[in-house]
Image (tube, rainbow, N blue to C red; front, side, top):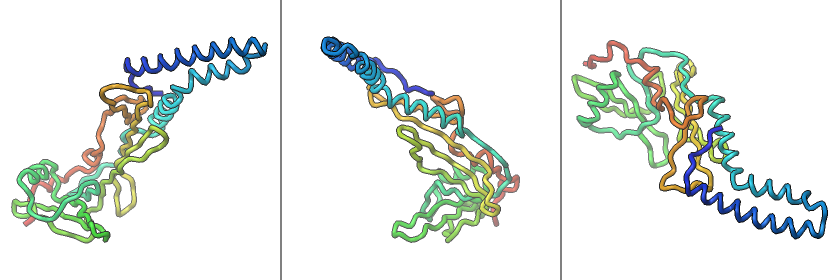
Length: 235
């Protein structure tokens, strides 16, 4: 289980709830015992409800978060390959000239070509922007479908259960259908009673349950290695 951070304001709120609730239940117990000798049969469940109900959500989230972290969180690399380029389904780009800043970023990646999503906002199928260095300059070409064999994906986040979310990135060989690598991270929300100036993130990408992560979603960097010939330009 991975419990959320504790704040003094949260403890004060729980303290008020427990003290007030305990006082009311003690008064009710005294009143009921004068009329029924087995009053404890009612009072024990009421006291348990009082002490567990305010933190029940936190217990639920912490347990489920811990289970998911141990189950399949982490970075799993099944195969690495040398490639000239790949299709990045996580990035959108419009066709047109490549800025100097963008060109520097593409050069640092070391690939001969990159393919990104060209969104269609009219409701039709998306297209692809193919970026390739030609005679020293990065040129953008619009295609109907990706030409890269290897595709990089990342979902936008899925709620697994109350208060627990997962997000996964992956690299897939579209020719064979093989999964080359997967990275899965889980995030948990704060309980209802948490009061503070901020709500720091608790996430895990391994069985230790966080609260921080060791890796990042760009798993293709560890899987798709630029070929040694990628440094040259296409003539």
